[in-house]
Image (cartoon, rainbow, N blue to C red; front, side):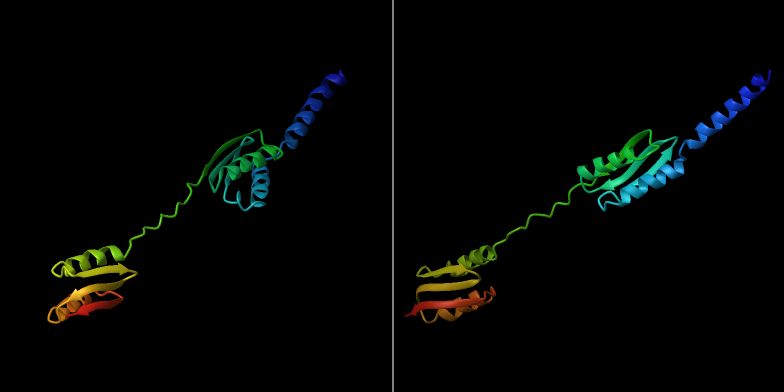
Length: 162
């Protein structure tokens, strides 16, 4: 008879003992966050714990950090399962530099300026116009004025004046 009275009390004590050993969700969350903060790559991951299920969210730089955050959460005492909602940030691509040769528009303009002078040849390199050939003395100022208006770095005049 005394055993029957003692049995419910033992069951109650045993039940309280087992439920008292179960870690609280807030303690599990703190443990997971602490382990994630140890690595700068996973420190931005946010954690929510509900009934021992850890839900991870946030953004990390690469897939290695994503899987490491899930592994750290799984290894934490009290975590029953992990829902990994962590995303990997898209890589930042630097735009390819656009190379525009400054000589191309200048070359076209020089070609237009010298088209009326068939004995004059002009080349453009690094913003410098080099003139070769022959030209009449009366035509030289007009040609030089037209070329200087294009604003080159320099006009290298190697023309023979007649």
